[in-house]
Image 1: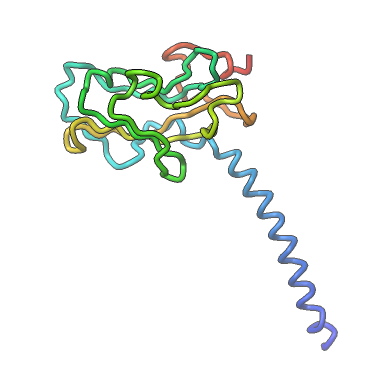
Image 2: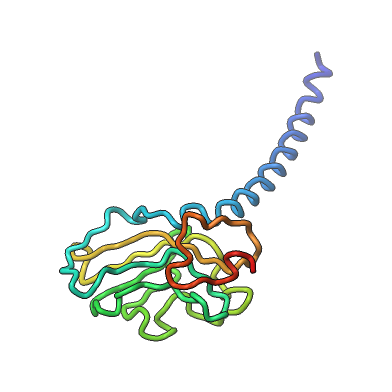
Length: 180
């Protein structure tokens, strides 16, 4: 009986170290696999969307996939018709709900479009591939509030992804999406 009690702490310690290493490896795999989870979801990201605009200036539409890799093909997040609504704010959040971009004159020049920074084959410094959230407010949240998700994809680092639920052909086709 003393033999079992004497070696029990050693066995527990060995089990603890073994299981911790396994958990660390699995969490890394899960993070890579889930980088694009929900990126083309039609669901709002921050509560119900509200649209009390008259609509005469066109519907505000956010593209759900873009590829900021410096090739000139869908390198910036497209927001159709936002320029017609002067009193707007566009805010972009990462998966931790941290603000990574905000503009009150979206799309007027490259400094007012997401992402801001040098684009190359490796993407944009400080902006990782994955799912992001957006929130657009025109006038105030009772007049117009639209939120949702989009994919940012440069294939750096290479993570296998199937964008079949996205609509990458809406504003052109970037060969990086198909691996060409």
